[in-house]
Length: 184
Image (tube, rainbow, N blue to C red; front, side):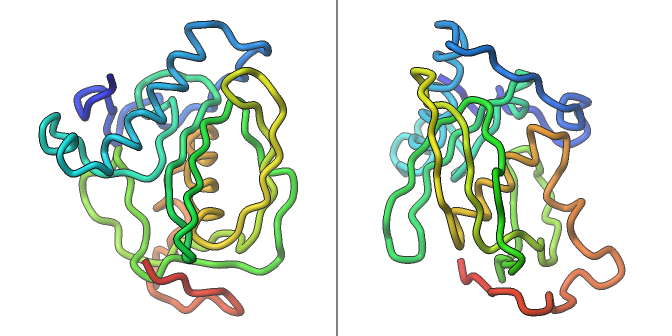
C-alpha cells in the first residue's frame, strides 16, 4: 500500500524526467504498481482510511510521484454531474483536444507539492485519451471538464511537467480568454 512517505516531493529529480513507456502486455510487477496507484487515490478519499494511514486526499496519482519512472496514472474523481471516473492506465496519451480551454477557479494542487501555488492553470476543455488498462487492453476515453483537467495534470507528470509551470508568472489570476471556469 502506498503512503504519503512513498510520494516524492517537489524538487526530486524524477519529477522533471520523461517517464518510459510500459511494454505491453504489462508485467505482473507493472500491474501491481498500477493497482497500487489507484488504491492510493481511492483510499485517500475515504476519510477513515485516510486518517488511519495519514493519507493526503488526492484525485490522481502518476507513477513518477512514487519514484517509478514509467508511464502509468490513476484517476478517481467525480465529475461536475457526480459521475465517477475511476481509471488506471498504462501509456496514456492525449490523442486529440479541443481548441477551447478550461481551468479550475480554485487552482490546482498536487500530492508532490506541499506549498500552495495560487493561480489559474490553463488546460484543454475536452480531450480524448488513449492508453491501456491493467490487462493491456486498449482504452479510449473522451473527457471534459474536471476529469479532463485531472488527466492532463497526471499526463504532465509523465513528461516532467508540474502544474505550476502553466501558471502565468506575471499575473497568476489573469483571466484566460474564452475558457470555461470550473468550480471545485
